[in-house]
Length: 289
Image 1 (tube, rainbow, N blue to C red):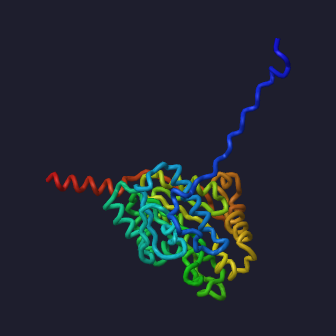
Image 2 (image 1 turned 60 degrees about the vertical axis):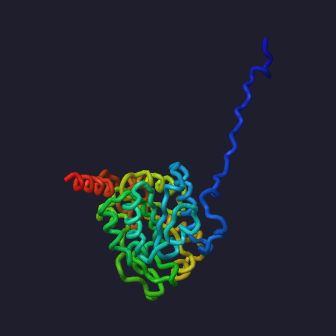
Image 3 (image 1 turned 90 degrees about the vertical axis):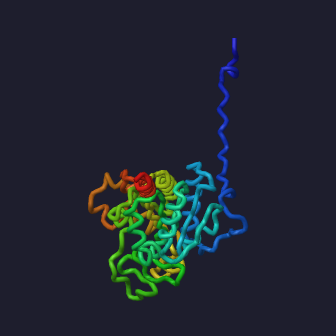
């Protein structure tokens, strides 16, 4: 006959959570990064690396392309095939790279100015063609690298070096623009909601076709100071936490409750022939004649 002590089953040992190891994905000697204290770009980089790890794609099969700007410094820190190009031209280079090496997983890191202003034409046509690549738009609503000029996503009324009395131009909605131009995967995330962002980036990279992720993050050095935010934390709470709502939450809210808020999550997804595959079919057909 067993004793009471013998009847008690031992508690299952809790597995220790092993910290994520970033070192295989980071280029040696490049850290600490040059982004300002409180900048959201470091959080986005973390989410990007974790998402890439989850895909299990070999580092040799990944190519990261950028233009010019704070966000475009990202390839300098990662141990992949990388290409740091001209202002606004990242998507043109990425298109050529994907056409030449269609098996590569091409990721473009760009900013709201780099992608939507000087690079706006390339952005539209990259979405239209539907090449299999992922475009991450680090959207901090200002030109952070060149002293805080207004960008295509600077909200009306907000201050910048080129709008000292408040920006009067209407803003681009990155996601609406991408969808209208033909991108087959469109999503939005924030540096504040980093766990959501990691999942969205992963899903974007696994999609076949042009995927665009509008990443809302903060520039405390220029945008924050110009517009009287006291701390980077306040910016994240006001802009990213209170200024956005998830797609799931939005279904339960009234239109007036959604007024002025940006939606987070996967906003649009569709299937359409991928450009490189269609181009290859054309080459084969021409050669067969």
